[in-house]
Image (cartoon, rainbow, N blue to C red; front, top):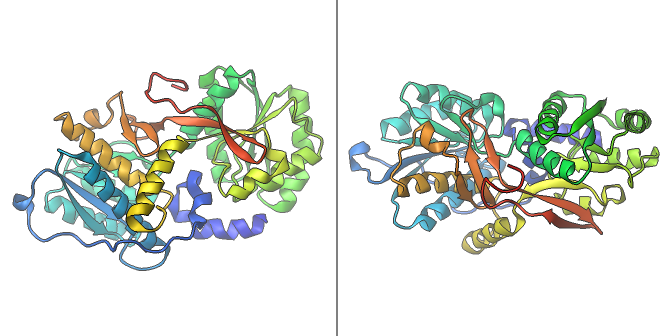
Length: 391
């Protein structure tokens, strides 16, 4: 199980959208082909000039992703009403050098802001290329290591999810938390995010445990993790594992090793509802995790499929959100400076509220769900403003 995932994860490593990784297995066919940059210089353009950088220019998964991002961005432009967005598409092929060159071309053609690209290395290269021109980059990555300066990441982050889940858990009486993480870079990054989230929520990290990222490693570590949970008085185990990796085996191994699920709650850092089969795992019944407002996102999925005949790619909504933020600032007659982009009130996107932070990261309004009788049950709705729960 884990070895198969390890190979799959290596092939998807460039995506860096780790929180959404389980979704990338969805089968999608290409939608409307995206065109390259339009001819003509800045003098021919009207409205807010936006360059959308997508990993197209070839075939396969990257082209499907590129088409879906383009479609979602066009939906957002059409929804703005009264705000003119001059959207032009630039293909990067997922390559940092090409992404940088395309961003320079876009700036030469009058782009005021860059939306995209997807991969962290691309976004970093584009940010460097645009810094001297004072052009901000709204990347589709969730890798906060590249955020800052003129680069903002739109993808969901570990810190955001950790804060939301920890806040709810502490308020619900599960404040003594044992962190259980993978022994790899992603696990270490996630563990640090959980530590920050628990501290911010007023909870206590009573300890940390880890396991080698392999089937034998998980099985060998489970008894010791259960023993540590008992000794520290943990009331919740906050797991970094995701559904495509260690989670199915880890959760069952912990239960088999004698974990008292009545006394100790499983908390998830990532989406535990995708794929849907995860919801039927006996060990995960009663677990809590965070997810975007499911009602709002379902509306976007329905509209997108109605327009293009296929469901959107899992990260397509980020393109919609980027256009929504740009359009909202245009309606307010504000510029696209960092000060405007990081306005405290945030913006409304396809899966709820979100706002960009001065450090280049983001906050999103998330719901808390429980896995109950093989279904997702929202037990704490996503806030509709940044004065709501979890903020």
